[in-house]
Each structure stands twice: as structure tokens, then as C-alpha cells.
Length: 106
Image (cartoon, rainbow, N blue to C red; front, side, top):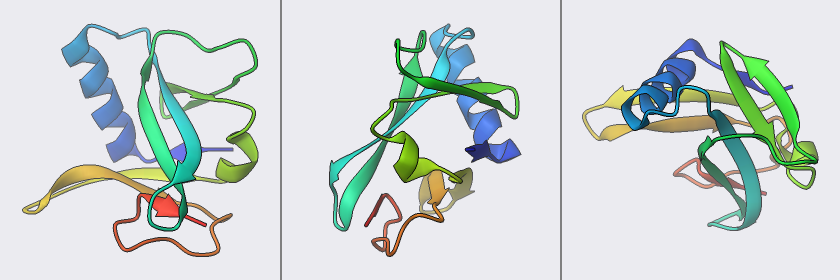
């Protein structure tokens, strides 16, 4: 199961409101690439695709394609704001290692 922290959920809800996509969900995908082998891709999607897993966490629908599901099982998505910038963070129990930016893993 994927979990969004309250900060991450608030950031997603804010993005939905700003774009007028209040009924959308957050798509989380993994694809080959990045510094460490796999990279996370996230974005708003109006509806789940046919084979997606749909999870609701912290009031946000999350869509995950079948290929990404085993790679993100147990993922915790956070959101941080700092002087250097803001963005999502990923704590993945399936990752053997991750790059220093935290956006890719192996």
C-alpha cells in the first residue's frame, strides 16, 4: 500500500485546485532511467486506466499501473519545502539504493 503524508496530500490537493482538476488522481509510475536505475514519475490524471490499482490515501486517489505496482509497494510519499525549493520525497522499502536527489532508485 502507498501512503501520502499529510504534506504530500495537501500539495496534491493544492495542485488539483489550481488546475481545476479536483476530481483527478495522482498517478505514480516507475520507469527505467535516472541515476540509480529506475525513476519515479508523478502527475495528475483525470481517471484510472483499465488495469490500474486505485488506492485512496489522505483523501487523494492514487493510480498505479501494473508494471509499477511491485516496485512501489509500501512507498511513502512526502513533500518538503525549504530554501532550496520544494518537492516530493520518496521512501521506498523496495529500493536497495537511491541516488542523492532521491528521485531514482535501484
